[in-house]
Image (cartoon, rainbow, N blue to C red; front, side, top):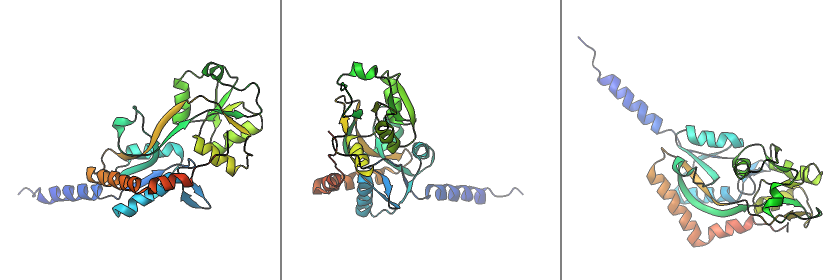
Length: 249
């Protein structure tokens, strides 16, 4: 007598249900002032937004701070993963489900205000002796695609960019939004007026929350509605203003 296949089929169904029931996880990276650790606590503009969304939706997902290169890998390979904050680009568009925007930002190069003569054109920037950026991620890849062949990709973390610039080990740095530059200026006690923003916008996009493609559409819609509720109430703008800074020129 052949054994019934019913128990095996039931086991497969239960296993699939358990796999789908794996809790959602939120991942992020160290990128001030949007998501970063301070005094042992995860904080930042986007972190506050994500927590405010979960307060509205009733979700209580674990938020995990990962090294920069592991966040995108986890988002692409672990089912039920959310990542913030991430620039929404045409290349990334089909890879995830999106909620946002949280805030629109741009990235400029910076040099010391004492540098002479100041760089004011893209041509001079392309021909600068050295531009230091982080070793991996969207920014160095973007610069490479724009034709910069004078890149020094030796900085593992943002704060190293500013220390290298102040120590005279590089002439120009590119890596953070203007809000990020203001944050690190405060953290490193860089006096106002020490840094000069070069008036060349290298990148502009909006920061979003990205969901892995397997995420439930109803969940994505609930988060989108919660974010819009924060926008309509003015809470999103209040959070943004708490992290603004104007310490550089």
